Image 1 (cartoon, rainbow, N blue to C red):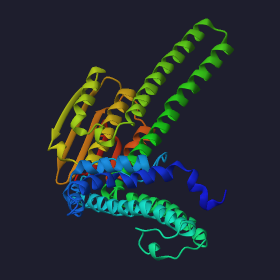
Image 2 (cartoon, rainbow, N blue to C red):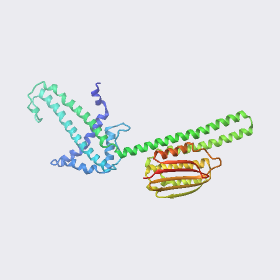
Image 3 (cartoon, helix red, strand yellow):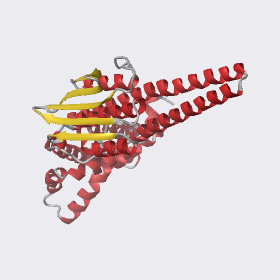
Length: 384
């Protein structure tokens, strides 16, 4: 089949035609009731488009009828949040009615013109059809009869494509919505990177220990040594399972919208979880954490979570001092705990790297390491 005829077999062509016809149903009812003022429906579209929920309804229709089957057509299904988005909705409604009127005119008069030309060819004049009622009868008019139908085909396909492009322009995401989507995508990528790093470190370490211990137990031939090796394998496996369960919890949480994820306002449950695990937590909050911007507050929560997890993992049930300070446009998070004995290296673990990376991405700084006999995690983030 020639390429220009392929839209005839596409269902999208006919769903777009239906979308063009929908506003004409309301206009047709109005013209039947009050035909003397046909411009009133177009006037009513202005206040209608300012209603935030109208954008959602138009977006749902556009995605369903203009871009069926497309996973990401670039058309929003959310209410208008800003006045700029509402004005774009008004323009969309007006354009949709204008193109709907054009398709309605073409759908009626082009087939009528085709019939009139055929009538001129075989039955004489066609009364009631402008211009064609003056044509003299002649069989040659039959050669022109298919042209109106071809024109109708071009109008249907062309206006459908034009309306789809307009929907992406007027019902597509605004700059603020694109920024929010980019923020969510960036946070998801950061979470996945951190999860991959943690899985590599914790599960890889557990498997390495298990393999080495099992091999040593088999080679030793000593029942007492074998019992110790199996106990070490069991302990390492339990720790790995705990890490895996925690990581899977983060994965399940990553499906939630960014705005629904925990912030520093929810830090109380982190502190309570640490206390339940045996740590003696002394927490102090200075300033209003609710005033911290969303992205900073969410990353601050993750930094605090990672710091407390490191305390429980490496130091166990020890006293922990947590300080959260919001002042002068800065957010300061500090977590201190006594060193568990041997002083660890200067923060080369994946969790500590993640803390520093999170702080750097937000334009802040983070320090991890020994400080005056304690192990300290301190992050300073912009909070304005």
